Image 1 (spheres, rainbow over the protein chains, first blue to last red):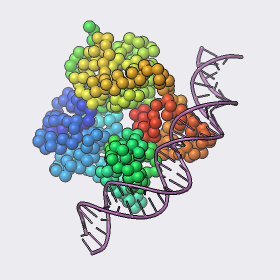
Image 2: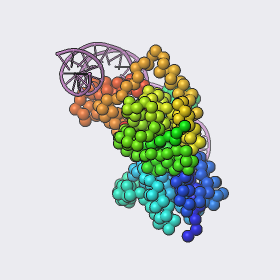
Image 3: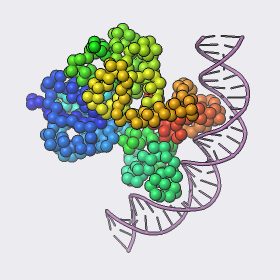
Image 4: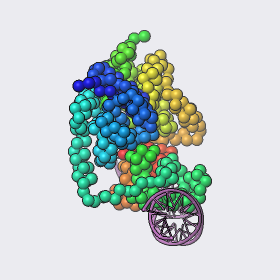
Length: 214
Length: 214
DNA sequence: AATTACATCCGTGCTGTTGGGTATATTGGC
DNA sequence: GCCAATATACCCAACAGCACGGATGTAATT
């Protein structure tokens, strides 16, 4: 088996450096590139001819989910190992749909990381032990007929409004900032709540965080 | 100067391994111990005779802030370098009060980490460049006559209320659930906002997330 | 041409939140 | 036993947000 060409993507430079350092000690791996800018990652991955991408899920610019989709659309053979802090159902579902080859929680150590890489190199799928049960449950739910109503896509304007709400601005303040009427902001707000099926600001912020909107 | 005895505390094993690996490459440092369990950290730190603790701020069991307070209470000479994802004023204020010797954001690389360690070893205080301005602003506020009411620690009851707010419950619902009057919930809510200096639910949820309350 | 999605705007009345007080019972540490 | 912190509860005024209506114009799609 040839040495995997690994590319690392994570918002936090220190995490990139850490993983790189971890993998370089045991020199079965070749790190062909790293970046903290997820929206520039795909180009670099293509240029460096990487065949295994280790990516964080929660990133500012482009989420690990979106990055995975792009990678897989470009070349399905490029393997993707996702790292995440949380093991919630929504994230796991999204990752499976995006086509990740592996998923480990950040609270696992080097051993699990190298296990995951080996497993993926062999063409298998690796999921953290801690999330397997959750994963299975979520898969069941995905296949169930209920909840097929994907809460439709939010428009760019609506996402912008969510961000401003998250910045603790009132409708009036948002209106001022965007040069639109407070009424319009109210309407957007209404539509956001309707579309996402959320009833309170508290829920909205949590939603926004899981969706990487903020 | 003698080699610093470094102890690493972070919820995420992979982060611990990463930092350890980063510091071991350049072997000016001796890692005397690591842990992912913050509430067990103090004992280990004492046992290993560490003189520099690198700790994450956002941890489940015991926050980096609380850990720092305990360390400094035990022996003020033990240096503490805090790592955090966010550079918000509230966190920085709390850290300063807790007595950290340095603070770096996780999106900085190895170089800044080693700089920080060197600076701290020399007895100085190191703060990430990205947060210096914010920090100064917050210090000003701390020193100003207004707002001397350090937002003291939140009480267990208050934290419970925050959790329920985060679960999208209204004051009335929370009152029902806790068998207390809606008025009481309002009072708790008021006190929470006053103590934390937050003005909206949006801010509260973000605060709660950074504080691992939810 | 018709439809759909998006973004903009407005009124009215109701509910909920926020912030100003004040006050009492309980608890825990010293 | 005392004091501080905590948890409890109430009143009230002001404001923000929400529900329920409505409306217009544009752009893209069918």
